[in-house]
Image 1 (cartoon, rainbow, N blue to C red):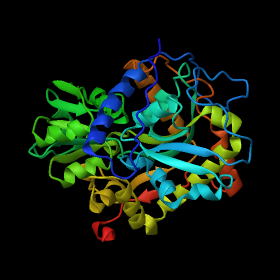
Image 2: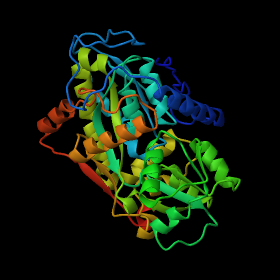
Image 3: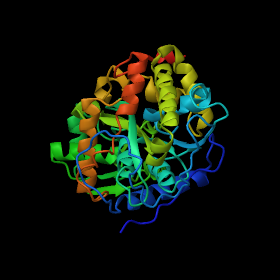
Length: 408
């Protein structure tokens, strides 16, 4: 039986959540993982169709009336300024790019999600219609049709080191390679937010190298930070910009990433199926604006302005750390590579393959009860149509690693 949906939407202004809200985020993530263990009511191969008008929507928590095509609409959007791979949402919020494409008079409320589970829970509860999330919560949300029907409509980020970052305690040995660093974790205490992209990455690497930590703890980003500060952790796997912040503060060392093990991570946009069905004009308009946001993000001359946007929409991060998280370079010895982020916008064979692997992982750890997504869980034709109209193909951009002097 599927547990009831819970909404943990941040009701504060979307700029500076307090410590209490950070703790709420930790609680919400745990609840989100529990929700991820609920049963879904379908199991078929992932494919690409728009929800038909007659499709069943399950126990939807929101009104199904979004107005007639072309009329103004109010949207609630969950986004993650604390997840660098999804920073196109930050650009959308700051530049209000949606105003160019949504019907005149439309309004949009952006709500901070400290972790992807918060955004998905709000969408399942009918509190938000569009969500910027990491790959794992995006997939979990698309399996909860007995609660509400969510679809994955865009691949907004694809990387090897935005979610896939191994950190060790600062006094760990000097390792000669990423493989040696991860093998050192055998018999050690490691923390990760379980059910997340970091969890899937860590488990995949453990299996490749035959590593078994003594303790593999399920901890939020806040608890991991506290654990490093109190010297209670040997290592953790986290995402950006937290990874760069922990390194900058001298609490941990970056020793390996997905670049070292050919492991990828991603970010998606999930949209409620009732919105897709009733207001395709709005969903298309949103993706047109999203494409503008990704093109802006990919332009190197906008990097400082993007950092300024993120700084204004987060708390606890300085601009140097935020710049390093997405635009800065790391040496190959710390899992660095020339490309920090690919911006596909649409779906590539690689991103669809990643979805398939992630579904298998989530099923294996009992976060979802299906081994394959429903055929219509991934809707590709909306993004494909926008790309065709603009004469573009995937990927629409790349963010290259820049030198330290470029940040100044």
